[in-house]
Image 1 (cartoon, rainbow, N blue to C red):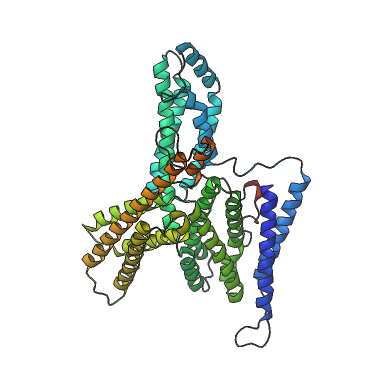
Image 2: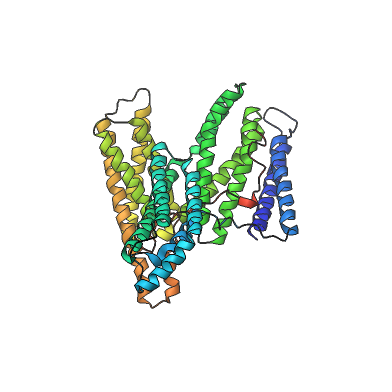
Length: 474
């Protein structure tokens, strides 16, 4: 069903953009009295329509149900692994005698091959995510992956000659390693959102448009497109995690459609820039920026605001400590951009965060003012004739840090009060769990130890891929 819905939504969108293409074709370019065709743009949308129709036909004609993209992701493997070992941990609520525990433990060991396969699938999903991370984050997450695998192997190996307490401890160590992996993937994903969102794609496309036209060497073209390709991969990974944790089928389907559009456009946009087909590339770029903005908006609706704020606070703390030794203007520019990303997040989630509440709205207004001030001063310092003392810039970022901390504290208090409210009204137990489903990665989960929500899927369309393979037009 999700494949059919995705195909149909893509066809409708392509028809809409094909109509826009025809309208632009009928308008003569500046300085000309004759209309001009846009073959690259038209072909892009026609190819996608044909691709979707063929995929839709194949799905409707087959008797085998395709694998759902939501069944094979970081979250599903994580929950499956934890559910297999949860009854055997030290923290298990379900008490049982030693003989009963031994029987249950042996049953798990018999199925240890299944546990191992689930853990390996979890690690595989994590490694796919690691490919888009900075080296420091990648090494850290890889270390946690190795720890999980080590404990999983130890659980299989050390099953004989152990009493109940030792066995429970061994299983609990594996559970703890999995939770630590989840937490650190989660933290890296938050930082990745800050690194990727904003006007990054607009800036990269402008740079490509400026430099790619005069390049003829294939190696040079590949080098010029590397930053944009890297950006696309990061955007895809964020979108895939978002699909896994969207608590609304409508939002998940919309995100999947955005990813399919971006994946398809990637094969046509760069060639159009290289060919210097300005009107073609401008139209395709408009489509790209619209889909990218839609994706960012949808992801912002899923991210937990409190944890998003804490992540930015951590980055500000680290930068301000480093600036005591040596001020770094490029880092200050990047931090001002990230502060603006969080400002956009607040504005997009105004109703959910309750920005109209006085204690939050006052801090929000102060934070917005400081974001504008920090942006202005670092842009001024970047100028060729700037003579702004670094201490003035650092002072503004310290004030920004203080305002952000007040926003985070107010939102955290508001969230706690909201979560406590249903309990006072005797709402059935089944309904209280909805609060743990509000985040992409950032809320604490109501299960043992300390976990944070996170998720990832394989391919933006999985078995429902709606775009020609990447490189089709490049």
